[in-house]
Image (cartoon, rainbow, N blue to C red; front, side, top):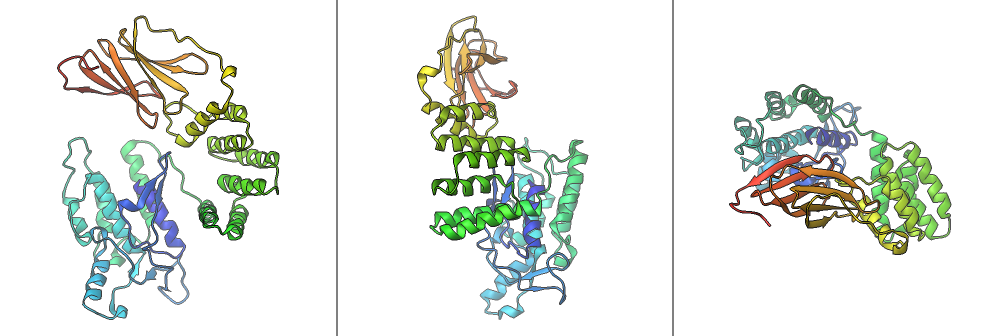
Length: 415
């Protein structure tokens, strides 16, 4: 999370922007764990000056006037600006804010993440949190190297802090490898990818506001930057198809070309499945989406599209099944959120995971010492919970079959 948010802020710094309101509430997560820095409404606008007459964002220190901030995460220079503003001091006498202002607020947010809570009221004293360790016993201590990095980010003079967050992210990646003995798994986003994403998101917003012509221009700009941008290809193609300027076959052909070079083939398959639903071919959508959905992956949009496609198919084309594997009576069943799987619990002390379309038992969950009386799925399909006569509840990871935790406390069977 710290690495990804550092990448995101560095990207906007390179575009000449300072966020000025970095905090945990302005970080959002996609279903597959990608962190997105959001809410640039308070960020103020593009920088008004650079350090040195010839230097731009890549070479100098970005300066900006004071914009919005949240006191619990503000830097010392932001706090000083707020005080001068309250005292009526002319704006030109306020401290200048630079990208290092975001460095301080980013460090406060990361420190809160490691501590599990915020132990300070004012952001300018956030560094005092470095003297603490998490109160919750299940939280690990903050690595010493991370503390040293955050201490550098908390230097009172902005010029003493790291020059930019790319340096910070690179340092964190080294720490990640030292702490986990593994290479950090995510790749740094490319500037072209981020620009294409930005143009595509702008196009969607403009289209929703009824500005179709400007939206079309932004989609074409996005595809000019990245001709294989999946969402831009799909949305712009869908608009053209609905207005009879493109055929559905042409749109599918374009998406297949995108898929050939995409790192997320499942996402492109989902978009092609949506095209099949649009053209009233749910069987083709089921065939395509069934190959990319796995139980417990959390790709909610894909599983929802598959469930819709299955509901539109002719039931007579789906043969019935008898599900047989338990050696004693079945006490409870529970459907997965996408409708493709279900769990069963039994007097034989086990749970089984079943594939609805094939009737096959995919996995057996064993660990209870008495009958399993109740089973349930989590809403994202990643976990299952079982209740047993052995006075425990078991938390299971669906995709691996591992029992993650046994909840104890009841003094009798749990039904």
